[in-house]
Length: 261
Image (cartoon, rainbow, N blue to C red):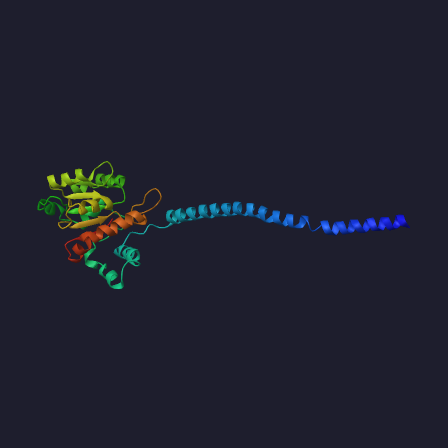
């Protein structure tokens, strides 16, 4: 009887012990689990973000590669200007940025070489060039996104330029002061360069925009990443800042014409 009782008591004790000890590891397991989850989740997030990033990049490139190239139009420039200044300007100020249709030349329909396009928009170039005698200025300015592209454009306009004097207006390997001296020293007819350097020359008083008759943007060309010059935020910003340094007022007075190549 006693043995049975002691067995029963012992069994009761073990049951009690089990009941008491069972809950003890549970919180430790629970506390471990969130740690495990916490360690696993960031990995999953990282994988997901890298996957989505890869997908996004691929998608943009694919869209640009597969989409039919559309030539730039005057309204594209007007829209970009409005989008850029919308948060910075009042409604009245935004209206002042509007350019008259008459200041735009016929845009490149993507069938032209640079020389053939320039001949179309300026058929009287030879006569115009002969009458130009002002230093620190050009008659025609071609604005592009990089020094490398500027050199390409200079090479590709040989048929148009003839014996016109051309100046490189970009920052790569050429100091501002060198360009200022060249502009002061001789009469130049054509300038090809980047908006940042042209802007800097205007700011320093080394380049006068008033005699300018034609301003052509290298609008449709795409780089290796399929970006046009106006797709690059820094270039876009510099173009708009250059436009505000007297270009817009020259366009409105109809002494300057804009072209999109």
